[in-house]
Length: 403
Image 1 (cartoon, rainbow, N blue to C red):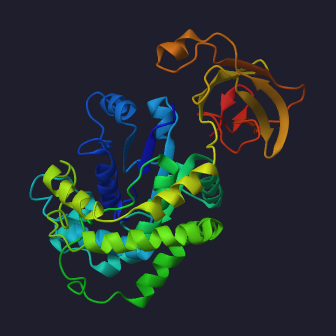
Image 2 (image 1 turned 180 degrees about the horizontal axis):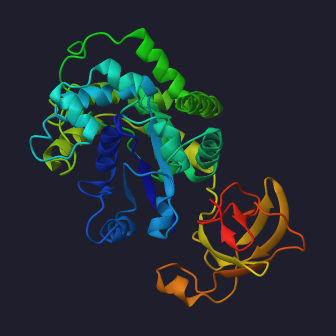
Image 3 (image 1 turned 120 degrees about the horizontal axis):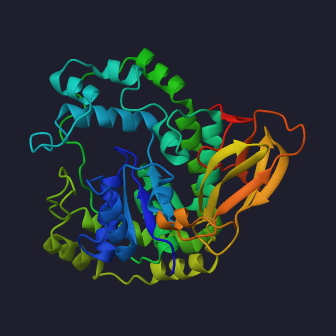
C-alpha cells in the first residue's frame, strides 16, 4: 500500500487553500490536521493511516515520530510576501481566530497591540528566519548544509512541490502523484483588510530581510527551476490540461465563498463542497485525465525512509539501532564517517525487542560496528550512500558524545 500523503504547511503560504483541494477530492474531514494533544501524535497517526491524507505546520522528519513512511508534499511562497502576510495576519487577529481563543506567539501579540511595526517585523525576520529551509531540512538552526539537505529531501522524499503563486499548476501535478483527480481549490483564510494600512516597507528593512533569509531565497528559486523543468518535460499535454484547469477554476472563483477569510480548523460545509463539484461537473475533464494518465506512467519512486539511534561508543564499538520504515524486513546499511571519509561499515540485524516494543516495525534493528584500530575522533554515523544521519549520530569521540 502506498505511503500516506503528508502536506508540510509553511505558515501563510496558501496551505489552507491546499487543504480545500484535499476536501474536494476526498470529502469533508478526511484531511487530518496534525495538532499535538495529551496523547501526542497517536490520534493523528491513527486517522492518517485510515484516510491517507494529512499534514500541518510540521517539519520534515515527522515520519520518524509516526514510525511510518510518508509521501511528503509542500507549497512555497515568495519569502518576503509570506513574511508580510504573516504580519498582516497577526495584526488583524488571525482573521478573527484570536477573538475565538486561538493562540499567538509573543511577537504576534506585540504586533496585535501595535508595538511592532512592519519594518521591525521584516528587518528582524520575526515571523521566522529561513523557515522553508528549516521545515524542509528538519534543522532548527538552518545553514548551508541544511539547504543541501532540504534539496535532497525534495528530490527523494517529496512527491510534489510547488509555489503558492502557481496554485493550479501545483495541484495538477499533485494529482498526478497522489492518484487524486480534481486539481481545484477555493481560497480560504486569506488575510482580510487593506495591505496599505501599515504603510510602505522601508527599503533597508527589505534588504536586511533578503540578506538574512538568503537560504530561503535559494531554495525558492531552486523549486521554481525544478517545477519549470517538470512542466517542460510534460509538454503540450500538461499545457492543455492546465488551460482547462484555469478555465474551471475561474468559474469556481465566481462562487460566493464563505471561507475566504475563515480558518479550516472545523472543515468545510458539505453544501459548499457540492456547489464546487457542481461547477466542475459542467466540464469535460478529458484533457486533465489525459495528462494524469501520461504523468503517472513515469511517476518517480520515492526513496525509503529510516529512523535510528546511536546508543553508545564503548571499547571501540558503536552500538545502536536502525529501521527501514519503508521495508522493515530489510537490513539497514550504515557507515561511520570522519567528514566525508568512510572509516567503518556495518548493518542492522541484531535483536532489539525494545525497539519493536516502542512501536517500530522491526525487532531485529540493532547494530554493533567495530571501529578500526587508531580510528580518529570526531566521527558520526550515517545511512550508507546518504547524507541522512541517525539520531544522536555524532560527532562522537571515543567514549563520549560531543555534539
